[in-house]
Structure formats: C-alpha cells, structure tokens
Length: 160
Image (cartoon, rainbow, N blue to C red; front, side, top):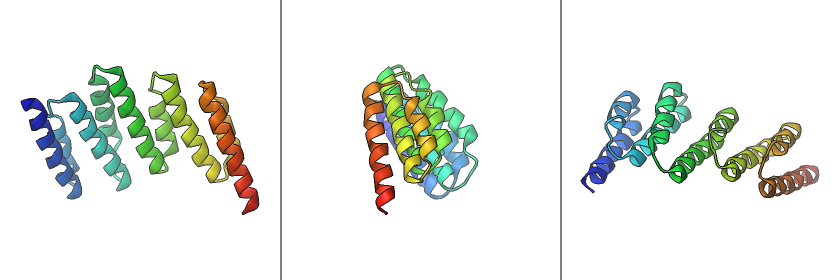
C-alpha cells in the first residue's frame, strides 16, 4: 500500500512538471515510480502532452510502451494501449493510433480502435481509406458496427 501512495505522489509531481513543460524531469521521476500501473499512466501522460505541444515524443513513447508491457495483467496492458491509442486519435495522429492498436492482442479491442479511426477518416471525407480500414477489421460485430457508422457518415455528407 505504501508503494501505491508513493507512486501517486510522484504522479502528481509529474503532472505539475508537465504543466511547466519540464518533460526531462518528469521522465526522470516517472522512471522511479514503483507501481507499474501508475508508472505506465505517468509515461502515457508525458507522451501525450509532449505530442500535444509539438515536442519530439518518440523516445518517451518507447519508455511508455515498455512500462505498459511491464504490467503483468493482460487486461491492464490492453486498457493502457487502448487509452494511449485513443489519445493519439484525439490528437488526429491516425498512424500513431493504428500503430499502438496493432500491439493489442485482444482482437475485439484492437478492432474497436480501428473502427474509431475509420470513422474519424470518414468524417474528413477520406471514405476509401476508411473503407479499407473497416475491411481489415477482424471482429465481425465491430466491422458491422463500423460499416453502419460509415454509411451514416456518407449519408450525412450528402445532406450537407
């Protein structure tokens, strides 16, 4: 329990450092976090904030992925990867989102990321790219859902 409280305190310190754009110190502190889940969360936060601010985040992303895969629980790994993939999608970093999604072992969850990326592409009018991505989805239920969302998006575009 002590490890968790110490980890939370360090995470809070990292949040403040990120606010001051002191990413180097934030990374150094994140490396010392004993709780593997909080460590992965801290690295993810640093990576996403660096990407938002246009900083070179690639080296920290490697550390983030290492921290995520250090967690022993497959569900925790999946959730962390999905969260990171969605953060990159929200930043409109499609390729990074798909790259991270490709690391998710669970087909259904990987498919959900691919579907959301496809819908995002469709909203930008990139219908052929969206359709190709949907066709690559392995989970049939998610593929069906994404196809219906794509059709709705195409119909919406026609009405506009």
